[in-house]
Image (cartoon, rainbow, N blue to C red; front, top):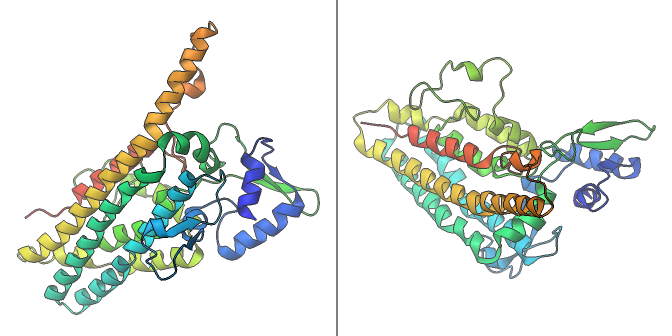
Amino acid sequence: MLRVACCGVLGKQLTYAHSASIATPLLSVANDLGLPPYPTLAGQNLWNYRLIDPSQSISEPSNLLAQFTFTGTDHESWFYVVLAAMEARGAPVICLALHAFQAVDEDDGLTLIEHLDQIAIHLKDLSIALPRMYERCDPDVFYNRIRPFLTGSKPSTKMPHGVFYEDEHGGGTWQQCNGPTAAQSSLWQFIDLALGVRHLPTGVVAKAPGDFAEHPALSGKSVEFLEQMREYMPGPHRRFLQRVAKEANIRAYVKSHPTNMDLQAAYNRCLDCLVAFRNKHVQIISRYIVVPSRKAQQSTLVMNNHQGDNKVSKEAKTAVTGTGGTSPVVFLKQVRDETVSSVLRA
């Protein structure tokens, strides 16, 4: 229902509104799922695949097919299933981290090192898996045909008010939503929380490496993008992360044992692997969003020149925006740099 409704909004008619016959059940289902009435990472990736061979691994993207795509292309299916397979591939990190919490509670440094070493192995594996996106998803097809369905109703200049959802009495409400983005991944937010990697709002820099305490940007009503994205996660995932944020103890324990160099090295290996993954993520974004965006802008300029219009449109001047509504390269580079800053120094 959600995807059909999205097609109605983002298709050729561009109505930006849902009649009560669609809006009422859509809002009801979204409320039951604890999600906004718009495509999310969970809906597009976690719940949108089937196994080709049930006897084979769910963590192998070539064994998965997307059940629904907007474009009907293998490019779009591959985009979804690579990310779904990665979530499955990274799932063991959750259990390992929870066991690591227990090791801290029991003051068992040796067991904690073992769990951290295993976490690092899985993070390294995820860095190897991410570039498989290149195998069957063409960047130009993604940017020009797939991405328009995933941009959300919040950042789009074509939907300044969002989407209108009519109620049964002839009234209704406008809602603005971000599109699916990796920031909505419960797994990656869990990894940051478990390892004690903190992030500031985009554009805000910590006073010192790893120093986030009492930062003015985190006070009052300032809500960082990553926390906003939790509202796009399934309710149980969101509540789990809230609990993890309170229970995570690995970083504090490692910092409290500065003479245990093996422990610090094991912790830092996890962060190094996380940094490596985020470097790969930046490369993906550059190839699938930044480069095609520049091509599109250049094409627009050439067309305008042929028509005698040398002015650069306001839309062409606009910074590249990701499906989540942020500048993706700026956001991801800051997330990566904050991970680098979290590495503990002897």
